[in-house]
Length: 147
Length: 147
Image (cartoon, rainbow over all chains, first blue to last red; front, side, top):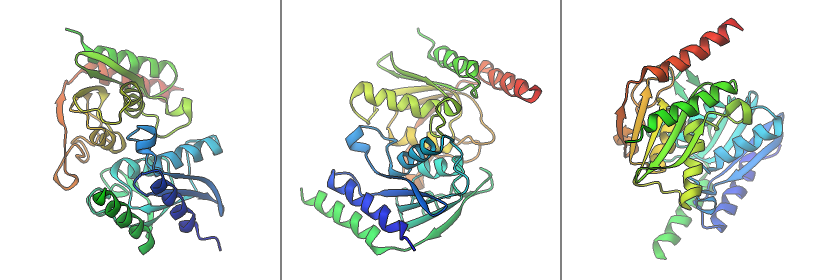
């Protein structure tokens, strides 16, 4: 079986190599990767260029539809409110999250956008508790502190 | 004095003319419009193509910086969580909102992303209570129901 989180981690490493916070995302439909992306906020000078948003836009382009029902996203870091809401609105069916984002995570760590009656939203979430996802972030911020 | 909400409303009308939910947004810096946009979700087949996101991306491109400190956004409808979080993260200083979004508004109507200690966010918000902003939405959904 293909380990899609491994593909997301490779995307996160590509982000780190560009000096970006290492986050990667992959969207899968019927067992096939239809979009992969990594954080490009600084490179593109675009606040919205988080891995998840870029992956959603690529998947919609690939399918010719903004409705991503029946797809799964694998993301190395817990999405922020912007990305969590984009995941809900794009109708992604299942979300695999590598590690927590205690400062901005919107899938339970600070607020919960994905499972919210007031927003009429429910996305099936599976936490994979993947140390490598958090190790990449620790490595990135350690390096940045030393610069 | 220029009525920037009027410019945002003209953007909302452009959206309606394309069959899109009529929402418009304008970003202003030092009294000058640096970006204007309208909802293009269906046209672009892109969940993220809300007026606010498109305006933020345009303003960042114009300024060559994702940091929009010192700018103001005028938006006809209360932003959803995706857009509210993008507004926080892009560091827009002040937000003028035309009317409420009781189903998805993330500036107080359902949740509050803009004034949230857990997210360490605070954006200065001014509600303009503009009936024309809501009238456009009522007109749009009335027409759609009759189709």
